[in-house]
Length: 474
Image (tube, rainbow, N blue to C red):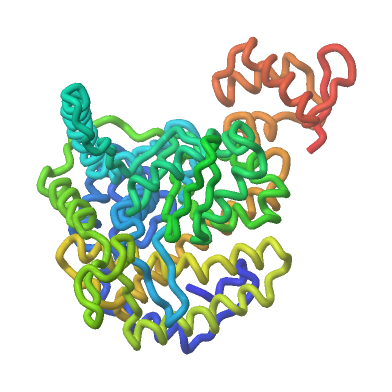
């Protein structure tokens, strides 16, 4: 699992054996239930009911389990927010902050997993909004009577549109944290320029690292949040992925902070009459609601109730066995991958898994707790092993993105049907030959083929030798 040469180094074989032993009680991976097999994520890390829900979502709606698993981890983190932190050792704490990107071509249903995973949180936000509207009416009536009531505040978790000033202000009203859900992540990156260029990007770099938020508002007020947790998730197609993660974003470590889910999906899923059993969606909703019902730590065994401020999180340490396993992963798996990486981009990518791994462990521990199948006193050895299995799957997805960004050729940016047409054509060809090949290979019309040839010329994939004749560069 860890010795794959694609990572740039080999891991300690004894640790691999240790991990194998620690995972021996986890059920085997479940086989594909639909035609879109792709790369199967390790669903065995999840509670049985969550695993079953993801399998049924694939059958009913063609949602690849990779998208559903990533969406469920994100939703769990959003439900927990700033109320809990994982302690690797005293002085080393992490909050469940994730940046998740669901990568896929059109019609891959890449947004489906995130949507169904966030449904319980969205339902709670909708209920809170209705309450806020009622409170607003009562507030206005009280003001008309000459009273000075407290201004109502809208409790919400999910945000879509924002500036860093707006999101900081909303976080101040919702100290347990926020989750940004962007249907197209390209819009999130576009906002970096829309709302102030480098300052916006620096804000999100700092947020992921868990640094306190300090934002000066135009009203001369300053917002400061000591323990911010703002997670971000959304979808993106391969083309925009390459244009967005430029050299600058690779070198400043932004891409290293993102966890990707990018399964290979060859065809659009068929519609069918199958429905997800209501009991499974109800169980999942109850698990998320249970996590959202847990507040901050307001009791200290030595100082007494009420001494700690309300935003003080619960701290969950690793058990002794869990800590040994996690530290062994850091030292015997991740450190060699960083030390012997072939370039700084890979060093940076691997290095961030020292942070991804404990955060994933916290998310899994809390998801199992939400389902009533685990406590939250410690991160157990079993849960640590599950988290490391999930960590390595996410690493494989990051490696896929890395190869696409830095090792792919110019033809890799073409849609699959255009790649096939390009490869079918001879080194030199006429426009009539292109029309014939495009129609035979992909059913293209003459007009669509002419537009394709123009785009190839603009992208320096072909040269126009003379009227109606072309030569290929690759």
